[in-house]
Every structure is written in structure tokens, then in C-alpha cells.
Image (cartoon, rainbow, N blue to C red):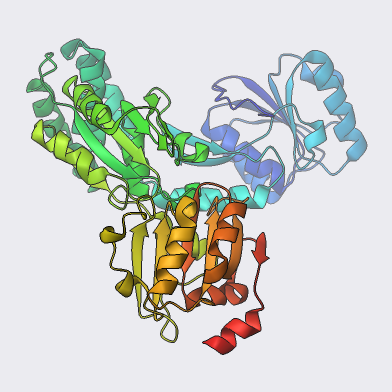
Length: 475
């Protein structure tokens, strides 16, 4: 982190602005909003600044800069095109340890202005440390669109009631849940959003009056699908739930970028399972979830992909439901959909595949588990989770039951990550490809795989083991 983000109280504090143009005017308008005492040094002022000067209490010194002008100043804004003057002021500011911002010259700054989203008293500052100002502007526009205008009033109302809530609800956990459930995520916030401020105040008084200090609230369990890896594939609802969690139980397939979005003071507990390495048995995990919820915690069970597609989410919720714990499900983008999309492989296509089947290859040795005749349909895409270790059984069973040996196949490891790796060949070569692939890996079998070479968009780390033209002619 190159800069430390700070919010500084400049009310009634002296700030020096060097420059009298439109850029200086924009900075001065911001300084006025926070109540700074402003002195301008400039030979002339632009019309905008002249107008401000006549209507506001601003001191204008139309003289050349002198280092003595820095006495008792806590912040300097330099907005001139004079490089020598800018350097002189910066050197003097550094000698005096005074914060200085030289507009559009990062090397002559000890502080920088972020892009500001103002929902007073909620303030959000966004900065790229001077490296990507256009990107910062785009991010600010996106956040402006997401944040309601009423956010500031909600914060002011919370501030007005904060001491009374603290006195009425002594337990800190109960108090936090009151704010989250009753105020920020409940009916009161909806009333404020609709500008029904008087009703919001009445509802708040009623909610506080009927809230006791005893922690009789049951905890809850929420299953959240984290997606196949790329943090951008996490749903907004999933993010919201993670931000409200007391405890998060996560698998090894959940990316570190997704884990970084969990509320900072939440407990994060790894309960992952991979081939030959189970940190906790499924039965113990189920009981552990129930125990945490019974203690009053908001438990998030965070799973890679989607919790209801080969994620044992149904088994876990059976135990939670039996214990009488409230629960909900936040679906995620399963690997079987997200990973092929990032590999440029459509799972269905009017010409090549009329259906898609998802199976797990974990217990593929049990031939009675699958209808191989159905799986061997050449007009169908087959997506196989955890199939790498049983690749030889998969390919031999499909071929025996009629699948063409030259059917295109793809093995995708680390799908949706920047180091995603794709191995493409034919069904007869599946075992060889599997030995070359990393874990975790997803198998895609079907004629749609040949379209990868035409619509691959995410990455070029692909190894081909067949002549594309021959496969296309086959179809």
C-alpha cells in the first residue's frame, strides 16, 4: 500500500492554494465544503474564483510566492503550470513537514486527492495512487449508481440514536445484530429510502423498545456458492451475506480473492476436502455447523462453484433443518458452467449438441452408477467433475458404448483463473491428457469442444493434441 487513506478535519484550519485558474477553483470548492480557512496566492483569478471571492470569506494575496507564506499552514494545494515555482514550493513544504498536493505531478505530492463519493456523513474516497485516474473515475460512477442518495440520512439517524441503543442493548453482539437486522437491512432502511423519515423514526423507537438484552436470537446457516474461482463471478447476494457473517466455513476451492471479501472480524475456518485429504469428516462438519448456529452465530458455509451441484449442500442442510436452525441458499456459478465458458466452449450448440449432462467422476468405477448408453450420445455434451483420476475408465466405457473415439475432449485446470490451462485432444487420448493435467480439473467431452479455437477469449494457455480440421470434417 503506497498511501495511507486518511480523513482529515480541516474545519477552521489554514490551507494555502497556489494558483488562480479553474483547477484551483475546483479544489477550493471542495475545501469550502469542509470549512477550511483558505488563502489564495495568484497574480490573477479566473472568473469562477472571482465570483467565489466576493461571496465567501477567502483571503487573496496577489503577490509572488514567499516561503514565509507557509507559516502556520497545514496543507498546500499547488495548481500552476510553472514547474520551477511548483518545485520551490514542494521543497519548502517538505522542509517544514507540511502536507502538499501538486496537481497532476505525483512526484511533488506528499498527499493526493481521491475521487470522492459524498453521502454526508458517509464519505468514500477512491484512489489509484496516481496511476490510473480514468479507472478511478469509472469506479466512482459505478459506486455512485449503486449507493442510494438516502444513505447519508440513514447514517445521521443512526448517529442520533447510537447512545440510546448502546444504553438499551448492553450486549455487543446483540447490539450489532440490532443495527444489522432492524436498521440497516430491514424495514427502517426501506422507509428512509422512500423518504418516509417520520415513519422511520417511529419504527426505530418501536424496534428499540421491543428489543431486550437477552440473546434469544437463533443463529442461522447460509450456503453460499462462491463460483469457480474468478472473484468477479461471486454474486452480489453472496457478497452481502459474507459481509454479515459471524463465522465462515470455507472449502479449498474458494479463491483467496473471494476470502478477502469476508467481513474482517468474522471467524474464517477451513473445512476443505480434497482427494485423500479431508480436514474434517462430513458428519463432523454438519454437527459443527449446527453447534455454531445454536450459539447464535450467523454461519456462512462457503463452497466453490454451486452448493447444490456436487457440493453436498443438500446433505448439510438436511442436518441443519433437522436441528431447527433457520437457513437459506445463495446459488453460485457452478464450475461445469463457468469453466467451459472461460475456455470458450459452449455446452450446447444447435449444430453439435442438443443437451448437456453433468456427472461426477469420483466413483466412476461403479459401472452400475451410470447409464453409459445415455452418456455416449454423440449429440450431447458431457461435463465431468473430479474425473481426472478415472480418465481411463471414462474413455473406455464411452467408447465401448458407442462414442466416437475421435470425439473432442478438453481438460481444464484452474478454470477461470489467470493461470488457467486447457488440454484439448480426442476421447481415445483422454488418459494421456489427464496425466498431464493439474488439479483441480474439469473434463468436457463433446463436439462443442472443437469450437474452442474459434471463440477462446480468456487466455491462450492451450495445448492441442489433434488436427482441428480433421475433427471438423468428422462432424
